[in-house]
Image 1: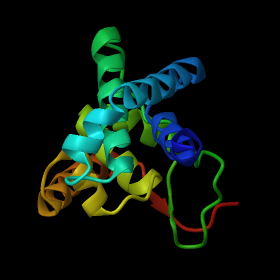
Image 2: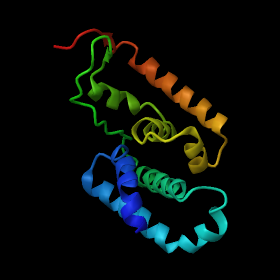
Image 3: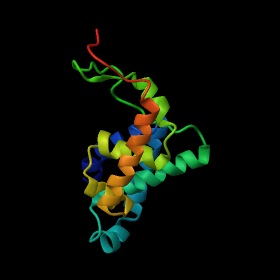
Image 4: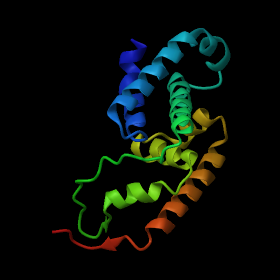
Length: 162
């Protein structure tokens, strides 16, 4: 039941951090394996401090970070908006470029952006995952977005896409 409830969320989050489908599947599998293995620890130690979903995201973050540490590959954030058609006046960005520019950010900054904008988590939920205050999440996210905007400053144009 827990797997069916939380699999879509965790799978989506990992999808936005790992490009290769087989690696994504392996990481998601590891997340649920570790969660079930340590479920009694969560119930007694963490259940009063954070939500179950936050605990799963924390495990997923650790698994993703471990994957990148072990392989020392270029970090990527897979975007799901490559073919999105912007509205009039929206910034027009080639999301392949956004993907490249994300590599400049640290793994934590990429994770924060993925949790906030792809998973649409609230600051409170992200704070639970990282075990930090909401204001700290806001500051870190603001700094990450500022870095990304700086990297993209010459890549953004405005107007109608045809």
